[in-house]
Length: 259
Image (spheres, rainbow, N blue to C red):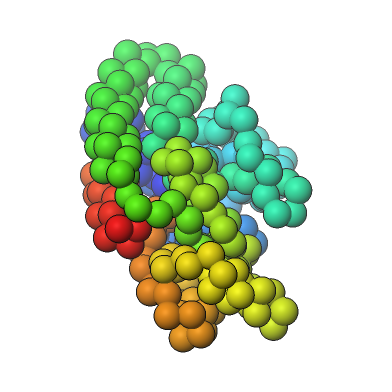
């Protein structure tokens, strides 16, 4: 798998099936693959793999290189057929897994993709995929119920990871301060965001555990808004329940922040 959320999804679909090994190409603390450069170790690992499960939708910018250099490697794109929202750059936003509804579609795509690539285990991939989808669907219902009556629905985030999540739960992203991880907003952009937060009365800023909260702290100091942590699920423990647990924590954080 290409990176953490694809690993967790695929682990649930194929993890315990005899004769199948699920391995993640990147380290679990890598985060999104926006500017990721393939290493020699990555290429060696891919040359030994039968199937490469990727998010697609432009997340793995190196995918063309892999296809050219690793002959015979079968590619499963989890975002296949999913309509993308547009990012600030005018490109498709690849962070679809942050929406439980779209994550369910990704899990189904992975199960069907593995079944097609490995027909003798097809029934097992599909069975395990359905079982995991039932858990994510139950989570989706709990989150919708838990966020139905929050008092405010405007949030400020620091990475373009949450548009699908916001759409799923009826939230409005009033501003995205750092559109790419590690990028710094200009003084003007920061001033505009501070003014927006003051004018709108937004009380919650959502930083991410993977990236520094420097800008969030500057905005909070000027406006009195509180900083909360919302996790897009790009790093974490390498266990099947990780996505479910991460989203349950996000639910509790949002309930506290938006009340």
